[in-house]
Length: 122
Image 1 (cartoon, helix red, strand yellow):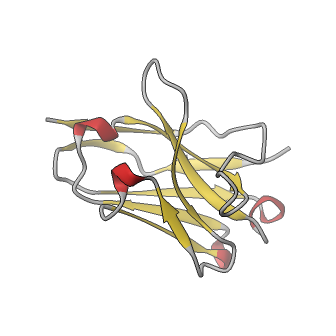
Image 2 (cartoon, rainbow, N blue to C red):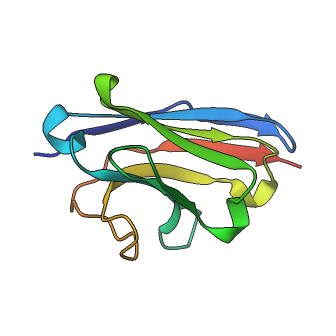
C-alpha cells in the first residue's frame, strides 16, 4: 500500500510561518509529481500546490500564490510546503499525494496519510 506521512503542522498566529513535510515510500515518490491538498472542517479536500518530479515546475492555487512554496528532495523522498504570511482561512488538515502535473491535480492514490493539522489564529 501507499505510505504517506505528513508532519510539521501546528498552531500559529496570523502572519506566522510553518514548514510542512511529506515523507513517502520510494516507490510512491519516484517519478511522480507531488501535490499538497487541504481540508477544512465541513469542506472537501482542495488542491493547494504541486511540483513535478524533476522540481522544474510548480503550480499553486490562487489563494496561496506568493505565500506558499512547494519543494522536494528526491534523495530524501520528501516534499515540503513552506507557508508564510498565514491567514485564518488557511486553517485545515493538510495532506500530500501524487498528482499528474498540469492535468487537474487530482490525487493519483486512493489512500491518504493521516494529514497534519494547521491552525491559524486571528
